[in-house]
Length: 220
Image (cartoon, rainbow, N blue to C red; front, side, top):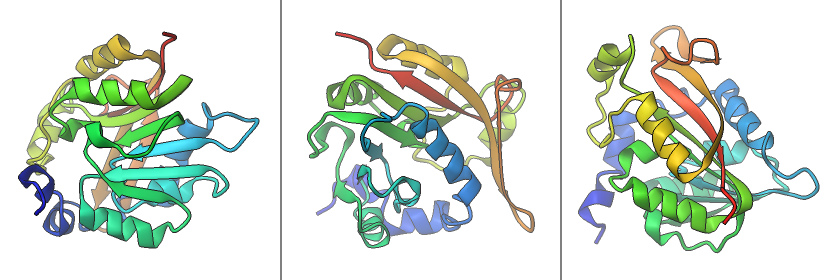
């Protein structure tokens, strides 16, 4: 039997909230995510990467196939789809505190994931445990402050978002658990008839509805 909290993320969830999954993950968006990871990945050997909340594996499929690619998700439905779509990667159904893959990893990613996880302490502890010394954690989260805050709250139909917080909340959390190297603002939305808008910015990062944050594990 699937635990109740995990059952919320099975087929019905994806077919309701992310029924346009492929359109919401266009190549230019995946290139941006890949660029964030390639910017901090080792250059002298294939990187070892773990994508937490991998969904159908779109991001991992965009990475260099010579890299060691791993993905986890609480959704059995998503992991089954990812396993078929990205046969060169290794996937597992797992909660954040029960990830079965041994570290260390060079980079751990979580794109639009940790706002769903009640315990951010568990997120930080797991990521720090699995990262190699000097490894990097890259994450993207929606934010609900600034001029776009009221609009984002109105448009957000995902009831599984347990953290509807400001960018300063996330930057403070990241700074307490890692060394923040950079962060950018993201403007993204699926516009019917126009496709998926995905714009990144440093200049206007205080006003965007989402942020991307690149961090590094601190020395012990």
